[in-house]
Image 1 (cartoon, rainbow, N blue to C red):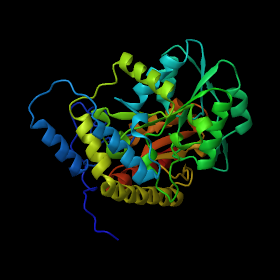
Image 2: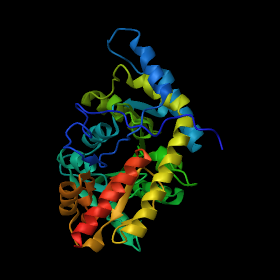
Image 3: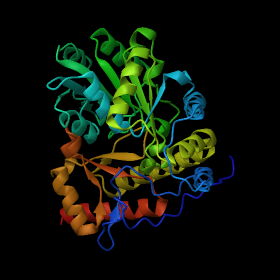
Image 4: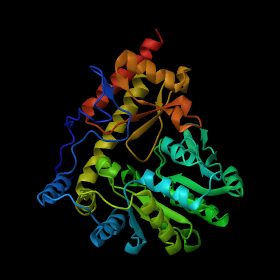
Length: 390
C-alpha cells in the first residue's frame, strides 16, 4: 500500500462567513451541508498561489487546457474520454441546470425527477415557473430502485420536456449501474425528453463499481443527454465556481452555451481555471487517499449505529460522502428529529423532508471530516436517540 501523502486529520478553521461553520452556537457540530472538512490538495493551493502572483484581477477566459484537463480526468478516472469540443464551461452545476431549464422548456412544462432527490432541483424547476413531476424511487428492504413502468409512463406525458437525473443519486448515495443509465437515456430519447445528468458526486464512488457518465451511452440516446461535472465536491472547491457541461449533440451544445452566456455563468473567475486544471491533472493521488478515508468513516458509522443505536440504519451505498439514514423506527418526522437533535446535543444534520418522496423518514449526515468528528457526531446521535426513549 502506498505511503500516505496528505493530511486528512485536521479541520481548517472556517469561522467568519462560512455557511457551515460561521453561525454556530457554542459546542455545535455541523454535519449537514455537502462540503468537506479537509484541507484542499496542496497541488491546487500551489496553482492558485501562482496565479495570484500576477497581481491583476481582470476578466478571464476559458483556455483549451481546461477542456483537455476535463477529458484527461474522465479518461483516467472513468475510462471514458469525451471529445474536448463537447465541453462547455459553466460556473456551477445548479446554475447550468437552471439556465437549461429556461432554454429548453417553457413555463408550465413538466420536468421529471426521481424522489427523494437533491432539493435544489425543485428550486430551479419551480423557481423558473416549471412543474415537478416525480417517478418516485421504490424503497424496499432498505434499498432503492427505479420504478421502470412508472418512469416510462411519465416520460411519455406530452408536457414532460426534460428529466433531471442525479448520478450518483443525492441523497441516497447510489451510483446507478451502466445498464440503468443506458436504459434511462434510451427511454428519454424514445420520448424525446432531454436528459440532464448531474454527475457532481461521480468521482466519489467508493466501491469497485464506477459511474457511467451519460455522455457514454449509444449515439441514438447520446443526442439527448447532457453530463454535468465539477471538481467542487471531489476537491472541496465549491466557492471557486467551476463546472463543465459535456454535450455530444452540437445543436444542444450551441443552445446550452447560449443559455450559459445569457445567464452570466459562462465566464470563470480568477482562480476557477487554474484550480480546476490542477485538480484534474494532479489530483488523482489525493482523491485515492480521500476515498479510503471516506470508506473508513462509513464503516465506523455503520458499525457504531448497528451496535449502539439499532433504531436508525445507515443505508448501504456506493458513492458520495453523504450517509442516508433511515429513522423511521423512531416514529418521528425528520424535521422534528433534526430540530430536537440540534437543541439537545448540538449535532446539526439534514432532515430528509426537503428531498421529498419518503425523505421525511430519513436524515442525511455528512461524513467527509476527520475521524474524530465522525466519532463525536455518532456519540451525539446516540445520546439524542437514548434521550428520546427515556
